[in-house]
Length: 559
Image 1 (cartoon, helix red, strand yellow):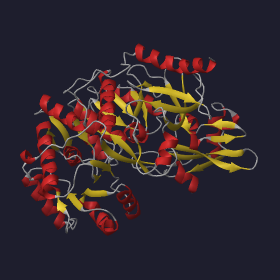
Image 2 (spheres, one colour; image 1 turned 90 degrees about the horizontal axis):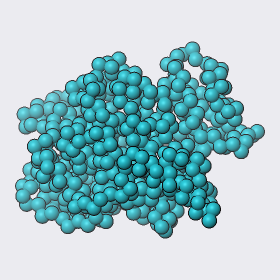
Image 3 (tube, helix red, strand yellow; image 1 turned 45 degrees about the vertical axis):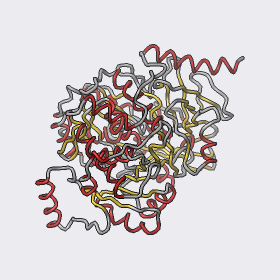
Image 4 (tube, one colour; image 1 turned 90 degrees about the vertical axis):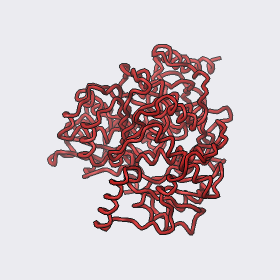
């Protein structure tokens, strides 16, 4: 009986939160059941409205539909690719990404999102493991793909250049300029994406798709650190798309009326779900930022194309806030700012709201959940929280034996809902370790749910530092450090210690060359319990970051 009461306490808190903020307990039935349906609905409702802009070129929904159908028709007519085959997409965030992804879905193919910066070793592993038959690659990275072709299952290589979807005049001018600069890439035996897009879209024979058919293979370190692909179905992605729309609708977003600023790479599931699927579902105009590291160019684009919806993560927010022209951007249209992918520092959130007038709505998810689990309702932020569960989603906090815990108790977060992946491709043992027989996804994250139903992430289980038997969560220390006026970034890891088992090591990037270790320690003393104080402090010019801005603690441990 006690166990049931414990389980219900968390469940009741989650239900209470959904009722309080008018979040649906379940999603209503819908005629949209595949990702092809998502696009077709947008084309029917918003044919002449802008769908996506990149590098100054805009496609309407009708144009996106026509081009993706042309690509799918080419696949059917000029290749031996068949429904269920895997096609990798290896490019930065360009409009071509949406064309190719929806073209693949229309032909019944499975898209495999690939980081364009991958090395030969990484590509060879993923191409072979996923049995990739075709790849669409950005021309700059073609040599790396060609180098591994003979060692993989690749049969077709499509190549795209930055201006493939621009007008013929601009495309020709840029081609001549690149040749003059010596930056033109010879295609060799690879197929130009322009060739495929010249196919008559009317010749497409739409593939027959079922909701449970595989849509994506999304590689992730998962909860155990081994690179493996999550099997994400059309149903998974449609569920997350509709959950995402409800989240945005709570911020007064209107179908067919929004502009999404999307600076994160589309090969990352967070950006893919927001820009490629949810944005299309709601008929939004998505502004893609192919190179968000160019902060000068990014701020110029924001001044030209002010957004109503902005997505990012902590490191990107900090870089923008520190830019001299950031306060010159018109933020009056901005309705919601979304943060995900890494922990959001309270200081960053506070300054962003001060400058933009818009709160950052923190969210939580992981690739295995396609990726959304929770979000913070607009106007109802709780410091340190990642919000409440999205529709059709259950949360459970469990101890080391998998037994449910009560509200405010710390344990592993488990998630159950229609967005949970089907499993890992070719990793049956890892799948069995990650998803229970009754559908609960074990996230590997340590968290808690409070009595209002708000979820808090305390850390990854593998990042937990145990000092003399006390649990120390790196995110907590990093959040405190983020309030120091001279510290831009920080990261915490655990290191071996003969006295306490592990000790806290803090890495700091500072704007003040005079800042000392003692200054940092003094800052921590009245804000953290003694066992959380950093024993070791190392100053660095920069921290190792992933391509989406996450601090790579693993590299810090290995350094």
